[in-house]
Length: 200
Image (tube, rainbow, N blue to C red; front, side, top):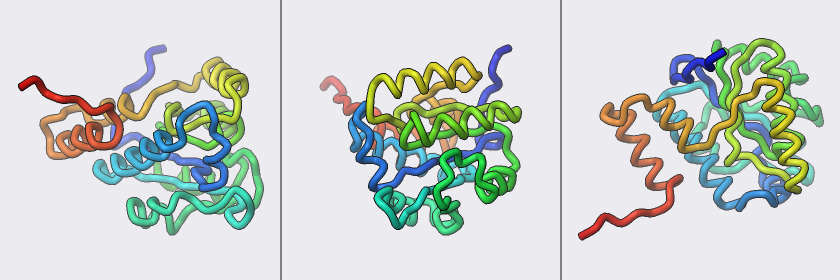
């Protein structure tokens, strides 16, 4: 089966546990790059007026608060974030499920910290319930290469699609010449892609 294209009108962005404490567990990617790409996705969702679901786990403990930039970039999603009391699989949290249902979308663009605990389980659960899921691998990461590798393999076998920040933004943009497309391409060159210099 050929996967359907993800569009701004059919997709929701779901960011799981991008917290100041849990981010420090990521050793498979550069943390600053993960943060930069995560915030770029948040900005892209704002440009495209896509629904966003944020969730955190036990913010008052070592996991820490969500990235503070979310409060400015996505004020409604941040204010309405699902604060889980310790449930590992966010999909098992009734408030999280209600937030997903409230988007009215069946295509979910997911990122989570960490891949091997926080992303894998809701991604598997969503696919099992008939959602299409793209896991954004450069806004997710794990403490160890082997746990990252095995989590990716398990998700892939279950039907989770993999993508990266620049790829999903391009898929959502559809046309760089539109006002939204122009804003997104500027975002890509500012926050996601490596710098380039034009020949003189």
